[in-house]
Amino acid sequence: MSHEDGLAQLVSSYGSDKSSSEDEQLEEIQCKTDQCDKIKTKDLKDGSNFYDNINNAEARGILPLPKGVLDMFKEDTEPEDDPCTHDGRIRSFSHFPGNWAMHVYIPFKANVHFESLVASLVDNLSITMSCDVHMFPCDELHMSVSKTVPIRHYWIEPITEQLRNGLSSLKSFVCVLQCPGLYTNDEKTRSFVALKIMTENKKFQAIVNVVDRVFQQFSLPSFYKDPSFHVSVAWLLGDICSTERDKLQTQLQDVFDAQVCEKETGRSLVLEVREVHCKIGNKRFVFQLHNT
Image (cartoon, rainbow, N blue to C red; front, top):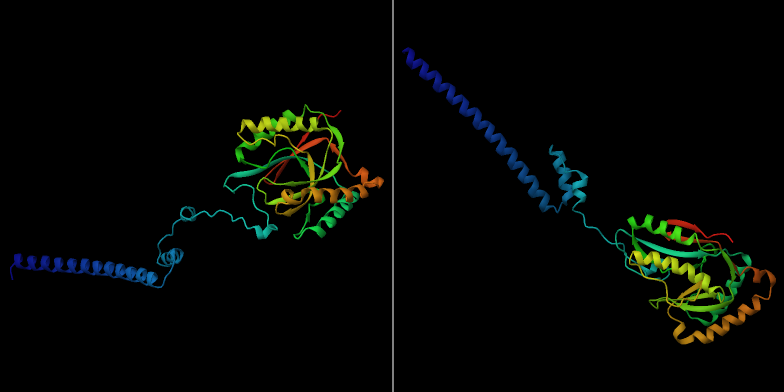
């Protein structure tokens, strides 16, 4: 064998070994690909969800997508307003993400004598009504000076600052709850038993005017045109004012007159208007009136 023939045979042998090695690598890659396809097909047939496939990917050494990316594709669900969870009450306005419910009011501090008076009114009304009459908790009694309105979170600071500035110039005062009254909400879904104030209307209206001016700057609804200032003490479902108002009004007035003859009960009807409160979501703001 010549030198050239030996060299040619060596080159031929080297080329054959290289091709064989490459073929083996391609076969190995193709095998892994086929196995991955089989796993994916099996997952789909088994009904595995997206997150199961992520776990399978981790088992195969494939890095999963970050949680922040996965959460981008989850649908947001609006909280359901289930009346069964709060005695049949219905939300005044629909929930919207980013909105906060805001309400401005004057707090009323009740004592045991006032609570006894309210209990007598509720018991008397419950005998007449077919539905349940619910007392408001004594630590939540108040007189509204605004409607409950939805606001954006970034409005909280400017609104509360303007309310504080406007209300600080008004003088504090004292008044008395004088007689029972019946009211119905705007949606006609609930009725309220309340104790009305017949004096100092101009001073209460001055507070409402300040709140209305601030609300108007944010395109929020004003308070009622001719408000009847009162403290609601109980509520019931439905509208009782349209058909039975006069009858029930007389009935409650008789109970009220009998109770206020007692000295301590009469004193419990005093409302000291020294500050205005504002509730926004779970936040509470207090605005002091000018001391006389």
